[in-house]
Image (cartoon, rainbow, N blue to C red; front, top):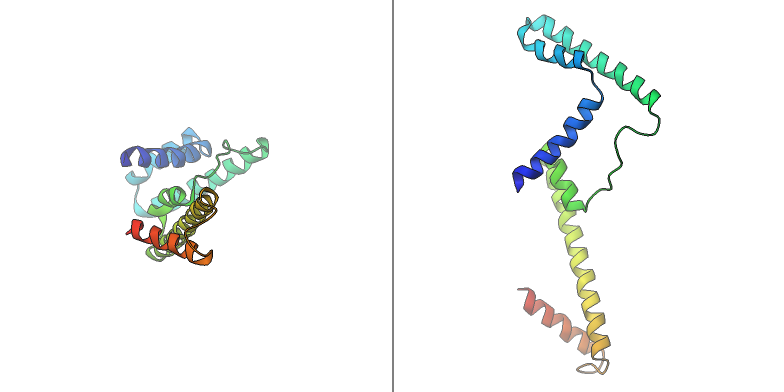
Amino acid sequence: MREKQDCEKNDKIQAFDALFTTNHIQIYKLLLPYLAPSLQRQLAVYIKYLELQYTAAYCKHHPFGCMPRAYPPDASCLYREIQPYCSYEERQKAEELLRFFSTVKNAEEMAETVRMMKELFPEGTGDGENSVQDLLEMFKMFSQ
């Protein structure tokens, strides 16, 4: 399963790269390792220049976008896609945010469950405030 996800990520990157290059630029890239280091540096800059030039021309002739619009998945799925490209600090911050989102989602689900329980049992199990507290205690017991 993980290999399939990795392939899909690589496919997105390769599709973008293939869209903004030409066969001749790809040939230059293939020849790069066979050149002397000083020529490699010059050719690398030239390759990037050609890619920029080609990209600008492509965007000028295709003003409606370059790739089909995809709607982002949930935050955790999106994070898994970009995580390999993040620094250690960025990963730590993103994981903190994901934990926060998860906590908020769990709280929303718990609140919805409490609301449904109140609808099912409007008379409650006690004197109003204590019945909600009892339900929360019950949820804590089941979540451990």
